[in-house]
Length: 81
Image (cartoon, rainbow, N blue to C red; front, side, top):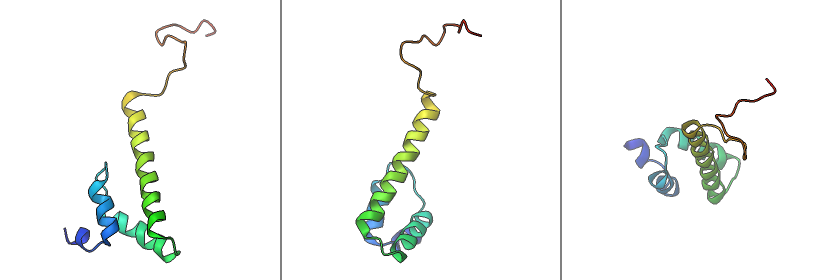
């Protein structure tokens, strides 16, 4: 809990509202690296949003399987084989 409490308030708010269980340590590393490059707070939070969205999309694909091509029955045998 100390690691979380030591984070900057905007980062604590972002983690508290995140859909995934982000580690305070990993978020702190991202935050410090971006701040050292002079990135504004809004840009860092947007970066975290994009990372989370990527993870959620990846998890969704692994749960539901790859998208099927439209108009093709997945039980149908491919006659070209």
